[in-house]
Image (cartoon, rainbow, N blue to C red; front, side):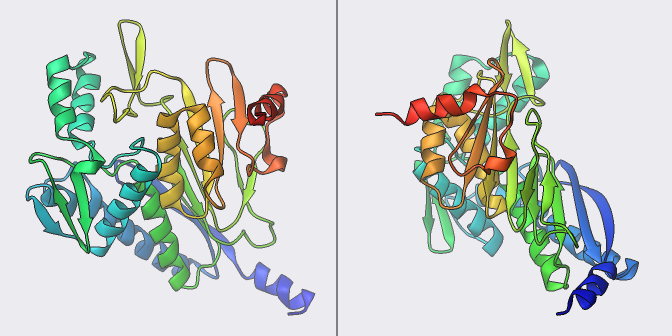
Length: 327
């Protein structure tokens, strides 16, 4: 294509943006289309797909597939739920349970605790733990079975990333090649905006934006969802081993090829902590991460984090990372 024709192709595309509430948050979609009619059709299709996934994956809705599955010891799964649970189980195995989709009894317990500003008793906590644990759930073909009755699934740590992926897939089928989907701390992108090298993504506390295409970014931490009891701040992110909300103040951001990976991994490495989280990330192909240690106001980057997007606010960061790699 000549430079003149390329310029005309770019000029023919216009930016459009729409927002709808789904999955307990706001989903925002920005896309480039040739006209408003095409953009509206694309928005309708993408949001319809997100709504469909909410009906499947929500643990708040009594009639969702996710809720119904746990009512029997064994159940057949739709393609979407199978994909999400399979990814969750893989991530659980890779992180020794730092990520766990079977924490439903615990997440419901901590929702109540946050509302009451009161910690659950040791007995109640132990009972919820007894009905949790990824090793008590087994994927058999397109089915799932549970070892313990009363288990509950919660895929909130991975569902929004998957929904962003699926929204982008719908847009691509409609001929929308350049789009951004945002769901709270989860973002997914396709091709760069016309005339640009990539999508600019600002990460809180970092002074240099990311520039990405065909990738996803997710951030996980306790900055917005937490509560304080007896002077201790508890996160909404639960440690599957103890059943307690995390008390560390670390914010993790992950860059990955797909939203389902970035979303789940951001939660997992928040639980793993800096040393184990970095070790996990370095083993994953095409994945990078940043750890913001709130108490110390410093940032630690994995090796694959884009050099151009590394913050200049904490010059000691690279020295720290080099010392950590020494034998």
